[in-house]
Length: 511
Image (cartoon, rainbow, N blue to C red):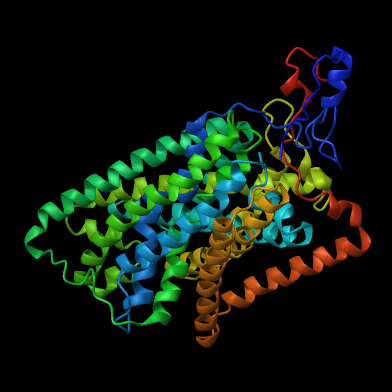
């Protein structure tokens, strides 16, 4: 997408330069200024890019929380599929999605990720739906992450035998403090927030792994793996379980929003989105195996708890349980930062395009981050988990609803982005039979998972499908409004970090 126009041998320097001074608008390829001017450009090495993916997935937090959320849906009242099968299927789906996104990431330095990819593949109106769906997913997972932070900090103090007069008030204060700290880190810069979150995740994964090993070492005589590979063929519970399990992987594609800020975007971004679902998938399968065994043998009140692993560890050692709570809370704090980082960059691009308020397209003059988008989004992300607590809903039910709704948002974006891949490649003359087969297969698999999950959800009277359906309908109506009333703004959808004059002429001053 960011290609150069060749010059002829023997031409004068001035004329040769004029061959390059063209822009991505229309038939032009080089621009004096990037449409996403203001962001810190070409600064991030591979580590912060990979850190963004890892933090958005939140392996430590997901290893402790998501299997526990899947477990009741699959086991209570029926003999549904086990955790290992459910997470294995979810991992296979996410690897397919990563294979679809990789070719586009290798050819386009996007700042809004799947939103921009879809605009170049399936058009601007479809991109509006993908953008709304992706922001819905990022936002819901960020909300769930903050709720998990508040829940696990309270549980940490309980395990340390600290008297808490009002646990709900304490959880609210923790959420507010976490939101404020996250906002400050994000405004200060993606490199700082990414490295902080990566460090937190690495320590949290290590803590969780060590504690699991210690727990099973003490309980080795009681361990039985007989239930790990048992399944009675119930596809309804499997589909619901996969949707919830998918929420453990979502966010792996978030480095696609760093194309403009990454030092080598066409290398680091594809690597990050390829390896993250594979590496984290292995961690989740190990955690699912351990938790399947542990929760099957645990009392019902522990398996149904919002903090089942913590409750399980507290039976052996309250100190171990408190350390685990700290690691999980830190992991979800990192996830909240990474999710809002990605959401804010999509919102920022929409502001630059004019399909969202222009104010969110402004950047911080010193830190060169989408500060206005971050500060507009963060209060909304903090209010929802606080409202869940005030409403009196149980933390586990709040987490299930928020994570599942977020998974719908991600899956909806993945469906359309994966389908756009062969069209994206055809537009630049690089499509192959393999790309069409991969795009179609991924589209059908994701569509089947969504359809089955939606059918079961509607049949059981769960409103989550209707909530997400309302978001999709609103996005379609908004795209139609833009098409009829503001066609020039709709036509601008899909901006990315275009090649600039300074990229080709390093000594030339930037206007």
